[in-house]
Each structure stands twice: as structure tokens, then as C-alpha cells.
Image (cartoon, rainbow, N blue to C red; front, side, top):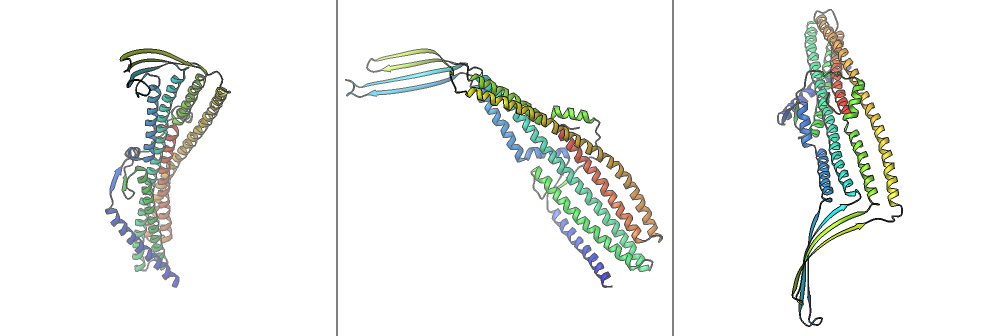
Length: 430
């Protein structure tokens, strides 16, 4: 008898705790900002506000500045100079002042290919910075999709939990009437009360999961963590028409990581040109004009000067040779990295594709199981209300229906996440 009272007390305590927590949550929700977002809107917001992405944008700007510097080195430069001197009488019989003013134009004529290769390197680095930025955007988009669909999954679980609470409460009301009429035992009433307390606890857990998932999404979007996000979901399940081989080929063409490696190969080739230029002559041309004046001679004259200078390395203790050897080793390393990257990308595409196919089958199977569970629950309700079945049979049917809803919801959410993973693996929207 004591055990029965304890069970009933636990059930009633769970009911009161759930009611208080729900009321507190409702009061807090009314005071917090709310925003409605689709997936594209969420992605656009994250791309705009994400701090780490802004640092990658700065890298592109830096690469653009370096490209401008490399191009400027091949063009002429103009400089100006001036000097003045005053000689005291102990050195000369009279005070004397002299000065000169000059302009000089310098133009690289031949650098052995160094300046051209440096510009080529800067152009490739600028393009690579853009490709790396694209990869960071793809990573951020995948993170947003995961968080978005993770929140959708948590919200679906909360809906299922609320429906389970409504079912359990309705069952408890019917059982209370039967108990008062003397048609069911005390055990059936306690079982119904315990079932309600259990599903209410499940609802609290599901609601907490929604809060955690919402915080994760808000953090990625760069908005206040307390903001309530209402998702605008598409009801359609997007099918995939491409074959696995086609998806792998698309990934090899589209993945920014492979394009970045290809640019690294070109950077290394341009670096080889710079190394070779070190053993070639470097020729510069100058054109200058100077104005000279001296008080001692009271003469002022202007002088034009045209000059050509050449420099060539005769002996460097094997420096150029070791640099060429290093360049060759880097080229081999990049070749191995490219092959390994292709294998990893193929693995990512294959795993995402197989997971997607599995989740699609699970959606079909869980949808059919859900229909059957709904029919089984309907029959169990009718049988229990007609007095031809026990409370245990109805609770089992309700539990089976709740689990069927969870399985279907999980299958849909897992499919959405798997599709996001596949789109990141291919680097394009499918």
C-alpha cells in the first residue's frame, strides 16, 4: 500500500513540476525576440555576420595588395634628390655655397624572368585566396545546414512529445472515469498517471533539446543567443537523380580544395622561374637630369644622364641548385597531396551518398510503420473505451505510435543532414 502511494505521489509531483516549468518557459519566451528564417535566409545571415569568414575575406584583400605590388615592380619609378653645401672662409678665400637638384627615372629592362614570375605568383596567390575563401564559405554553409536541420529535428521531437502528453492525458481522463465507475482496477489508474508523468518528463527533455539546438544555430548566425528562431521548412524531400560515379566526377571538378592544390602547383612552377632568374643577368636602365650651382664659379648647369647597369651572379656556393632541388621535391609532394585529396573526396562522396540512400529507405519504411501504428492506436482506443481491452494494451499502442513518429522524424532529419553532407562533398547544390 505504501508503494502505491509513493508511485502516485511521484506522478503528481511530475505533473506539478511540468506545469510550473511550462509556465516559466512561456513567460520567458514572451519577453525574448523572435525571428522566422528559411534555410537560404539563415545561410545568408551567417555569411554576412560570421567573424571567421571575415578574416578570410581580409586574406583576399591582402593578396590583392600583393598583386598590385608585384605589378608595380615592373614599371618605372621616378625619384628626386637635392643637396646643399656651404664652405667656410678658412677653407676658401670667400664664402661659397653649392647645391644640386635632380630627377631620376629607373626602368627594369631584363630581370631574367624574376619580375614576371613574381607577378604570376601574386596572381595565382590572389586566385587561391578566393578559392580558399570559397572553401571556408562551403564549410560554414554546411555548419549552418547541420544546425538548421538539427533544430528542426529537435522541434519535431518536441511536437511528438507534446502529442504523447496529450494522448496520455486523454487516456488518464478516461481511466479516471472508469475507475470511478468501478470498471477498472486501481492499478490501471496508477499506470495511466505514471505514463503521463513519464511523457511529461520526455517533453521537458525535448524542450531543452530545442533550446540547445537553437543556441547552436544562433551562434553560427551571429545573433543574440536568446533569440527564438522559427524555422520555415520545406515539406518536400529533395530526391537525388545523379549516379555515384557522376557525383564523384562533379566533386573532382568543383571542390575548392582540389582547385587550391592545383594553384599551389602553379605557384611552385612560378617559384622555379624565380630561382632560375637568379643565375641570369639583371639589367636596369636609368634616365636622370641634375641642376648644379656653385657660388665660386657663379655657374649653374643642367646635366642629362642615360645609364644602363647589369648584374650577374657568378658563384653562389650551390644556392640555386639546392633551391631547384627543393622546388622539385615540393612538386612531388603536391602531386601526392592531390592524389590523397581525390581519394578522400571520393570517400566523402561515397559515404554521404550511401547514407542518403539508406535514409531515403528509412523514410519510406518509417512512414509505412507510422500509418500502421496510427491504425493500431485507433483500434486500441476503441477497444479500451468499449471495455474489451486493458489499459496496458492501450499504453503499449500509444508508446508504439510515439516511437513510430520519432523514427519517421529522425529519418527525415537524417536525410536532410545527409543531403547537406553530400552537397558539401560535391561542392554544389544538388
